[in-house]
Image (cartoon, rainbow, N blue to C red; front, top):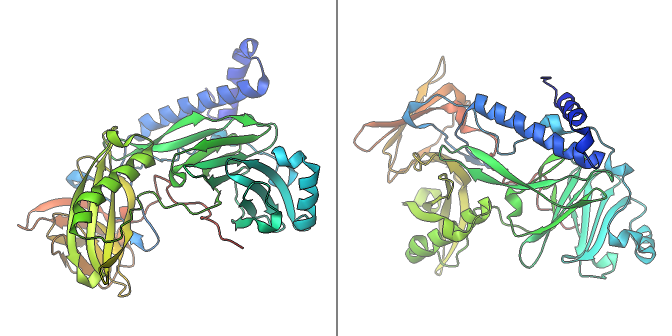
Amino acid sequence: MSTHLEDDVRQALRAGAESLSAAPDGYARVMTSVAVRRHRRRAVIAGTAIASLALAGVVGLATGAGFDEPRPTTPASERNREITRVADPASAWPARGALATDSTFTSQFEQALGADHQLLYAEDGEAGRVIIAISADGATVVYRGARGADIEDLERFAGLSAASQDITVAVPLSAGHLVIALMPEHERYAQISLPSVATDGSVYRNWRQIPVERGVARMVTADPVGALRVRTPVGDGAVHLIAGRFPEPGTLTCDTCDDSWVVQQGPSQFREVAAATVGVTTDAVTSRLLLDAVVPTAGGRIVSYVAELPTGGILRASYLIADLGNGDSTLWMVEPLRPLPVFDPARPFAFTAQPSGDLVIVAPGKGRIAFSPIGDVPALPDVQLTDGVGFVTELPSDFGSYRILAYASDGSLTGGWHGSALRVDDPLQVRYRVGSGAAG
């Protein structure tokens, strides 16, 4: 069999041509089938792996249990470059959506924005008035507001120019959001997905088809926009532009983050956000408090929560709670929501404390962390932990030049991993490709 997906597609199409009712739909169906078979073959060869997350200013210390060397990760995106084909750029697309054929609206658009914007899509729907355009510098721009609102009264959200040949936008609703994916007019195929986590911490995605008409995929969904991916014949990735404010998956909220909240409301909220991230009911998930340590030099109190998923995998996130005085508190994530193997829920992680700039190492249940040099690199002092938390004032220039070892409070070695696993891509794709937009 050819190693090129397009050759496989053509071969499959020729073999089943008599049973195909329409060439575009048949192509999409066979294309998907071939891609899935290839992905499964690659998955068998590649094996399973442990995935971890990183956030700006946050470093996740990823390790396999039993002192494993680094293993290849299973891409959550299931990105398959072979299925992407060359398509017309957005500047060649016709304007679509119900409002795009309304002469009154199009006249208003031309008068207000036509000088430096090209209209791609416009509607008055569940999310109110939504206009998608590209600006003169090639940026995706979304205008949104109440139904029937004048263009001058709409809120503007702009993103960077995307490299893919489709454009995906998410618009908030009272419950959930509206997802619109634009692609060339002849395309008839699109899928949407959320991540799943296996027992070994590897991440895969469950894809489902969404309706497409004239190259527009439109779907109202309650799924968290930050974890969604949309796949089309000409693109594959996270949402390009979010026309509103969406919390990052794993975000918790509290007015007074006291002992009661940490022990009761915290696990309950974490259970809900973990369930939403993987698209299951809250009843299918259990959660617990893993770590609660007071760390004054880091600005407050660190708590970690773990959620066990129906797939057998787990998600974990950690938060720093700071006392603002007068009974008020603030909370933010210092370890983003990430998958872990079910046998390793207490894996260490690190984040940068502000304003000191120290690297805070958090290793639940551990008493000491050591950096073992690999090759000719400077030695680093051990990090002593109190309640599983310690500090490094000088950061190594290359974590990949060290092996990280964890010791229990009694001195026994409990885990080890290669430092090259400290900085990796986000396997859940929970962060936005462009961002949440900015009013302009």
